[in-house]
Image (cartoon, rainbow, N blue to C red; front, side, top):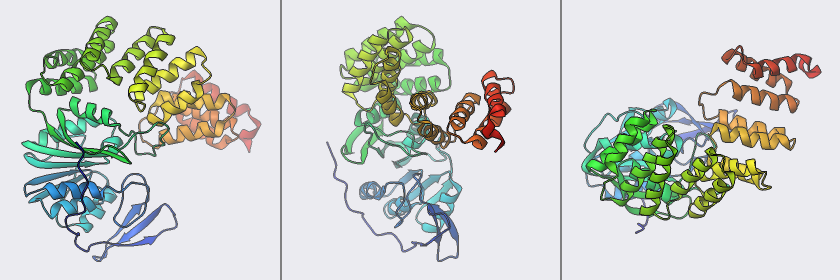
Length: 445
């Protein structure tokens, strides 16, 4: 079922700021009638009312949720500028708008008085319970573990609460700009919701820029066990995860039962129990013959066992079922590379487009560029990885340093070598780069 996104229910109060440009073309400053001036970057992080920028507008989804609100408490997770929270506040009795970015918080507090703007990171339990509705628009693709955010939202919703989720629609060859880490196919979003204790009620949008749906918490013992298993696996406790997933496999809900078996396979792999993992994945396929994740996981196991041909075949089968599966793309690229397949470079580019924040993928893609003498593109890959703000070890700085040196950017290479040695003073690879820089004639210029 697809629900048509309706027009906005009510125009917001006239609190729009006047935008004034700065010396940086990528940003402007919002001047409010109160006298407050807030920086409003034109970045992919968030959109601002009546300001064209790098982030796609999500106002229509807020309008759809507002249309269905009849009082109650509504949570807006990652409210950004609060343009959407303003719409929700016209219909809900109370709106909790959560945001962690300081500049966005300052903008939101000036822009709306219809919502309570709360400084909170949704990676931690939400400071509210019993909500009738929740909104997550262009949020899950920005976090490393979206299931953590969803389970916190699940805990904050009332028994009959529901959430509207809207995320960028994945496509092969997409180019995701930091801080966006991933986009979703309908299948992958449904899978994410299932393993986070939700079920899809109806699809709002399945074609176009976004994929969006209404979802409600699944309040069963099996769903609770599945959520516990996902959490245990995310914190590195595969034994506890295995037990929780085992309790979830008896679920009468097909998606919960499938995800429990996929979870058991991941936990078994972490414990080095390959045969148990394969059995769990076969059981997942028996429940859902079109489960791309099961084939991608089987491909990953085959690759670990040195069966590159089998791994490539299984990964291609997974990609046929979901062409935007990040795991399938990564395994296919690794397998093609080991086999010396002529399409290996293209496979790495696809893997990079679907997993731009994945360190190993970035490293391999940069290596492919470097082998062709295209050091500049290799540098771009690493700089984009750095833009996500994740901790990066000495190997990252060492590899980037070599790329910069080979591209003639000696001063930049020196900085990367220094950072690598600060992180790992006795690392041989970092020391080798430093020695090369000392002997390179360009290092003195």
